[in-house]
Length: 141
Length: 140
Image 1 (cartoon, rainbow over the protein chains, first blue to last red):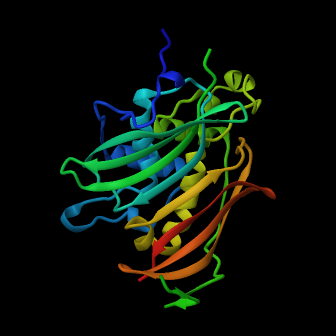
Image 2: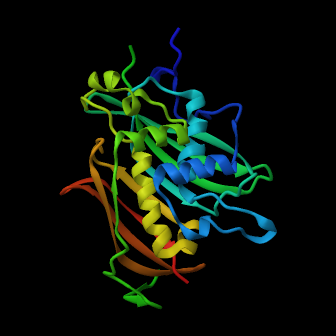
C-alpha cells in the first residue's frame, strides 16, 4: 500500500480533508516564515489592539498546504496555479481549520491535474482565506 | 461596474514597487523548514535529478511570498484585508536565480464595497517569466 493518496482514489466533489486539520498560528512559525521569505513588512512588526500580532497574508501558503499535506500525493507533484482571497490576516494565537474540496480532475499532455478549492476558518467559524489550487499530480510508482 | 483612469494617487499604468530577490538553496531549505513543505523536488538534489527539472527548484509559493512583499509595500491595507490573487506558475526558479517581481495597475473600478485596483503581476528570472497573474485590492 502506498503512503500517499493515489490519483484514481480522488473523486470530483470529495471533501479532501476529513477530519479537518487544525493549524495554530504561532509567533515562532510567523518569524520563521518572515525570515525565510525575507519579508520586512512594517505592519507585521507592529502590535494591534489588545497587543495582537498578525501574520503575513501569504502565510496561507503554509497553513493551506499544511492541511493538504494530510492527504498528500506522490513526491514530485507541481503547483501549477493558485488563487487566494484574504479576508483578513490571521492573528498569532489563532487556530485555523482548512477544508478542501476536489473540484475537477482532468488530464493535459498525459499528466494528471486536480483543481481543489479551500476555505480556512478560525475556531469561531470566521472565514480568513479562501483559495483555489491547481496541482499536477506526481508520478505514481 | 464603472471603470476609472485614476483614483486618489493611483492611476492606470502606474508601476508597483519592484522586488528583486536572489534565491539560493539555503533560502529554499529555509522555506521548506518554515512551511513544512519538504517535497524532495525542492530539497533533495539526488531526487531532483530524476525529475524533468534535473535539479532542485524553489517552491512556487516561495515566489508568491515575493509577490506578497510587493503588494504589502504598495497597499498593505487593501492587500491584507480583502486582497485577491490569481496566478499561474509558468516555469521553475532554480537555486542561484534572481527573481524580479514587476507589477502595474491595469484597471481601477468601483464595486459596491468601494474602489479597487487590478494589477498585472509578473515574476521574471532574467527575461523569462516564471509567474504571471493579477491581484485585486481595495484602494479606498
